[in-house]
Image (cartoon, rainbow, N blue to C red):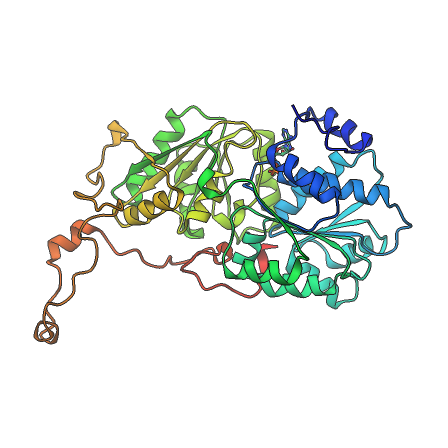
Length: 450
Ligand code: AMP
């Protein structure tokens, strides 16, 4: 068995790990720590919950300790997509670095700018921040990166999805050229990721620990078909009343739906918090604290609000709406079954979501378990016939047979048949715009999220 001592970690770090009962390095830690200690740039693909934060923090802390120098400008910068993730990362720095005397500060939105600037003037060795606010401090002259030794880009795929690509490139360009850069991502990412890797990393080692396809085996994945929104609401109430779980997160695709579902659940005296991009920092913090402390055990959230969040004992994820991409699905269900825990992910599928669910299944190369809640059995139980790819047969819009038909404006489908198929999936009325959905135009700087 590999131990942290085998990875040549400093005794002070091992002491902190032991105090937290962390004794065995996870696969990503075993792979990344020696390479990072050797000074290589890294591109690591590892899923959420794999212990990736410690995989970069331990070598980072060790490097700062071993080459100690008077505190002048920032020595390490950890860039990540959301405040919640930043707060969690700071907690891990404090826990793992408690015997190192290394100081860290948060630089995220939603906090007082001047207070942050004052804290930055004290020259903490590590800054943990979100790109939007970091750029603001850069422009105000508060952030000086010319002496930077280590740059970490955590959950890079999320940062790019959220439209931070230009900000990340700009910040990286300000950093000292001879730095070490560690890039972590839960998915391999698209073209934007290739660009970042090419311009920010220097001759990196690539460590692909697990991809979306090796999704957490500890998570049972089920689907339940639903007739409409009201049916879904009844299903959620039933599941919360009958499933055995410690804590649950229910994901919706829109803020409106999150608010509505929160109201429905509260009406049946379910204690629940609703978290989405419109909630202010105080509400978000309160929701997370209550959930962590166990005062509330159900959270209704949009993707943007739940990104990177780690809550112990979270073992049930319900997709009220099907996420619009396989990667988003991975992120959602990655909230459960973390580091050895077990979990259940249940997706509620209306007729218009069937094909999306089928493509996600194919993308993950996994088969979801089909489940029927008998007391709430609906009319819709999936398509009558499916194609070999799992999608509903005959689900493509039929073309007009002849130009003459088209001219006459003949409808391609009879009304009845169209109704059977269910409504076309339309753009949500109020999408949680920082969610980075495929159908939502990405913004350059999503603003309020960080
Ligand atoms: P992460 O993937 O970094 O979000 O980590 C998820 C959780 O796993 C955190 O609460 C860590 O404290 C915990 N963790 C990290 N490394 C280990 C380990 N080697 N053994 C057990 N738990 C760990």
